[in-house]
Image (cartoon, rainbow, N blue to C red; front, side, top):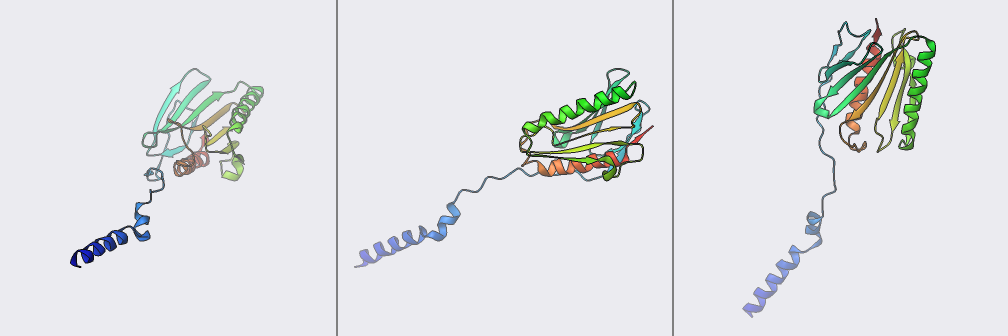
Length: 198
């Protein structure tokens, strides 16, 4: 009788261990995204005599200026901790037809991203709070596989044109890096609002 009691006790313990309460702890964990630590939001002013403009940019970014010719200069705002860069291309226009050509080329650049985009929102610089002599358009390009989540161009409507695009140095899943995109968009809007032609 004692052996039967021990066998029933062991069976009861085994049965209790396999009950539905413990099944929840054996479920696989849902996949998640890695943690992203965003840098503190502080700004400094780009101050150089090489460029005919100035703006405020993040203190967590590095600035690289690469002048290719008298009419084109690359300005790279690099975020090493986020593996991202806001690439700017400055061009000097000879006349209004040059400016028109630059704007049309920029429009084609944005339209190229439509094939991957789930939506594109366009904002005029006036509604973003840009300074008086700075005009342009800011594009938010939504989509999981979009290469550049935002893009903008600006001009003084005389001789100066600048375009800027956010790029990541990896193949992004924009759903997973959305907090980074939102943070860098705030930095870009700070650049737009503080931008001044000289």
